Image (cartoon, rainbow, N blue to C red; front, side, top):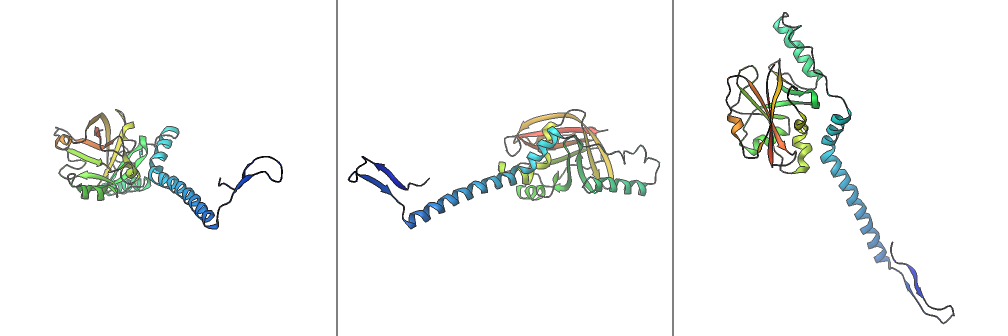
Length: 243
């Protein structure tokens, strides 16, 4: 409240003393301006918070109070194994489309309701390359393989430079840490569907790139993101193998 009116009085006789304060027009204008600016900054802060963290807050609420996404069964190959190849591919394309992704190369994780297209052959050593890719979806590391080739497949929703960029870069894999052994991961590639099962979850150092060069005698899917989300402190690696 601004000071105004009689603030001091002594005695009750007509000759008693007192002090009265009153702001000038310029002072009143300045006061109102500062008050409105303060309210504006508060409102802006709420909007900025909602914009930055809205996607991940929705994911947390959905995960805690909602139900996990169902694993699509249309193209589970059991019922399609005897159908013509072209017809099977059309069914896979329709299934991916219903999940909001492209069957040419995409990822669906039912447990955390994550679905994203995958950008192929992204240079994991080039910040400009992978930051550009991560604005569009999950990145596939150049030099690693593709589903069905029997080798390592490395996908990442990589580091952000600030926690305020979580919604821009990391929301797809924000809940990746909730994954446990036995959970399902689905990858669509070249109009085919590949199902993987989580085998292991690893927390490693931020500069540990050894997983990119990991070799195995069978196909392995690696998913990488930051831990905790929005930081560059550590890396979370999910290791899954084909069903």
